[in-house]
Amino acid sequence: MNIDVLISAFSKVSVLCFVNDYIEFNISMQEIEQTLVAVAAQRLLDMRCPFCGDECTVICRKLRGNRRVSVYELLYGQALHHVVNEAKGREETYSYPTMPDLIKKGIALGYLPMKSLEGWNI
Image 1: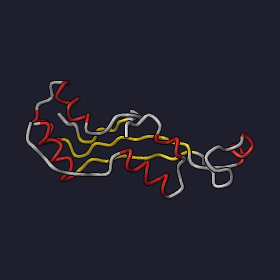
Image 2: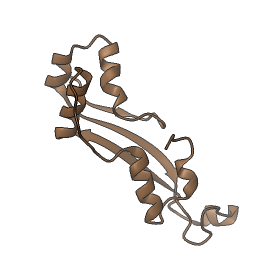
Image 3: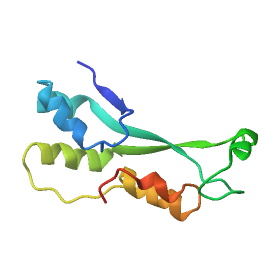
Image 4: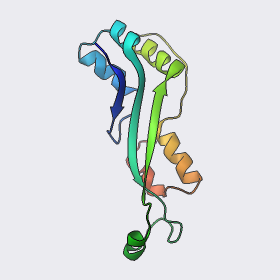
């Protein structure tokens, strides 16, 4: 079996859920450890308009070329190893940038409007 990389388009799901999903699909922990390289989640968001601010006018939306941006949450390397160990029942301490963290960074840098965080339980 070859799992390699799992890419998810679910908008409100963290990548941590996918290790548990594999277990629910009766994939053994040994297979997960040996084949899983990375997990990615993506979210497509409206960019903050540099001219209008958070709410863009209809005319401006038609004139602007880039109106949407993809945000990717990636879990790989040591963080993925810690998540797999946690799924086995071991206590693990780790951190990596989650989707809400990345969206907050986009808001702080002025690329995303505040409404981008709607629906996240933060």
